[in-house]
Every structure is written in C-alpha cells, then in structure tokens.
Image (cartoon, rainbow, N blue to C red; front, side, top):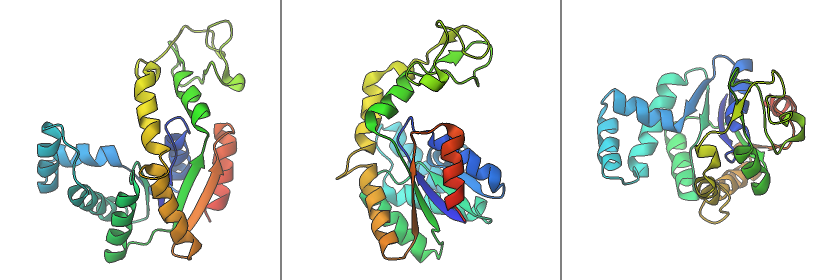
Length: 224
C-alpha cells in the first residue's frame, strides 16, 4: 500500500502517519525533510547537488528533489510507503505523479486531513509542554486537554511553550503555503482529487477536528 498524506501544520498529520505505520508496520514512513538530510549526510550525488543549492540559500529544484524521493521510495518502500511533506504545490504534484507513473510505482491512496486555518493555528500556538513528561497533551485552546490552573492537566507539572510555536509570523507563513488554493499545497491536493475522480487513485478525506483516537480510527477504517 502506497500513500501520500496531506494536512496543515497543527492537524496532527505526523501523529496520524505514526498510527498508520503502527497498524501496517512494514510501511515505510518517508518524510521529505528526512530525505534531504539522509542524502546530504551520505554524500550521495543527489545530496551533493541539493546541498549546493541549500548552501546558497536557494530552493532545491524539483529535478533534484523528485529523483531523491523516488530513490528513497524504491529503497525503503519495498513493502509500501507513506509519503509525508511532499508535494507542496500543484507543479510538484504533477511532476511526482508523472515520475511515479514512469517508475511504475502505484499510488493507492491520497489522504487529506481537513482542518480550518484558525483551528490549526490555535492548535500550534496553544501547545504547552509539561516539564515532567512532554508527552502529556496540554493545549490552552482545546477544552479536552486544557491545562488546569496553568499546570499540566495530568500531573500538575510546570508548562512551557516552544519558541517556534509562538512565532506567529512563521506559523502564518507555513499556513499561507498550505492553504493557497491556486499555487499552494491545497492546489496539489486538488490535482490528486481530480485523478481520483477518474479512478486513477483513491482520495480519502478526514475531518481533523476530533481527538487523536477519533481521527485515527476514522482514517484507518478507510484504508482497506
């Protein structure tokens, strides 16, 4: 089973990807950022080319990025893969689809976790980390996991906020890219949705408003 998963920052996409992999342990979770790091670390030919662009502060062109991704899918996804973090725009979606088709790699599912932009932003900026156990869920904007009197709702530990979570400009910039219906990630989703309407892949839409377990259960039921 081969899957591409979409969702804005704050939607729990990474968590849901982990739940999918837990049910299908042979499925390789391929995260686009990790692909770059691995190729650069191993000094592959593609990694060297990518590093040259990155060192100049330039975006790595799709002509390098997509072959990197395909190579990783072939090497690590022999029992199926879950691609996370790519494509980010419609041009990349079209190029990825063409490359997958030419490589005879089937795309079984395209998953979209839907979450309104204000909700996604609040989820990011409302996250609080427990000093005693960072896995304890605390969020000042979510009633179900709201801290108690400013302390961890589970153990009473001290809470803090990650600096990048509080950078509203950075959060808005990431969401500007994702929610752009013309040139952003949602335009890439629309490309795959059109393919699904023609029976060329399957599109799965998931409401991201529930808690982790609810969203995960709904998603796994649709991956059959």
